Length: 400
Image (cartoon, rainbow, N blue to C red; front, side, top):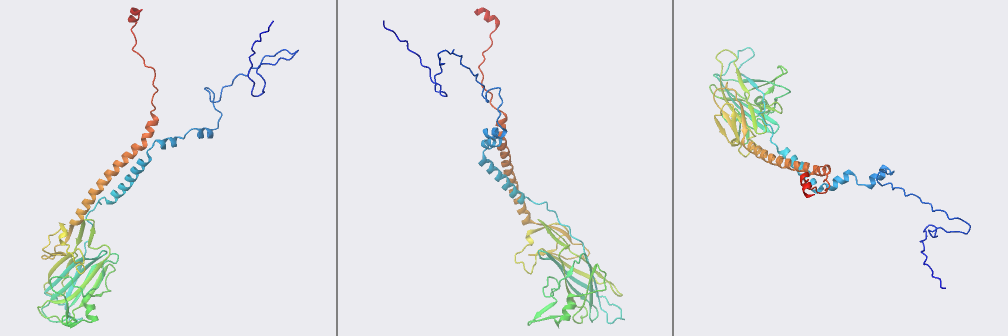
């Protein structure tokens, strides 16, 4: 009788023990049930909180900043930032200023002109006094006033003159310049002939120059600048004789000032005192204003200025304006530099365009930097199952 062998199913070996998973039955020993260990849920399964440290959690997922920078278009944002800062700075630098006419002080000069034969004789006043007054911007920081003084007497003899004007913070000061004549009415008192300089036909000496430009008078108040001098020779009766060529300079608080497109000037008033008996002398005054130093300037500038306020000038030359007539009229004016005004208007237009472009770039920059934040705050809702139109209960019954 043949025995049929039933195929035996071999259990796989346990990889840890190397033996079969089926229990090995030993003689005399009852088999035991295999121990079953329940599977524990993993730390990452639902409902179980991971015990990983916060540092590990931060390393395991990208940070908010890196996610924001990943969504931000850095090259575009950089270009917009550069345009905003650069164009805004240039536009701010080119913006037109709030120019207004500068304020200038009103000053006056007092002149005493007389003859006196001795300390015991009375003063003799002239019949006429002639003054050629010129106010000029000598350098960018210095304003100069030149007074050319002449007089006419009835009798011959030496003539004496004295000048007084108020000073503030040591301004004005004397700045003698006897060889540069700025006047236009009565001629240069210093005559150059055959390489020799003369004043009233007398050779120019140190004493003659000191009398022409004036010597400082010390018997005056602390807030008064006093000068005095004497004619170089005897004056002739009923003839105009040159007496003085006086120069005063300001470095601050000057009667001529510029600010942007505006220029303001107040030509100092001239007051002639009457000494001695007899009628007061007649004052003949010619006043001039130069916006630049006519001794150095070669380009005419008068056409660049327009008179905005003040008495109209009676004549002009390529470098300035001149006034004749009533010496009591105060020359206080405001002028507009046409070239500077047009340039400031153009710069104002360019500044506005640059500010506009910079503003547009700034708005675009703000939108670009906020775009990743808006995308983060509004996530896309998951697509759910489509819901059909609910059926009426009546129709359900009909179909049933």
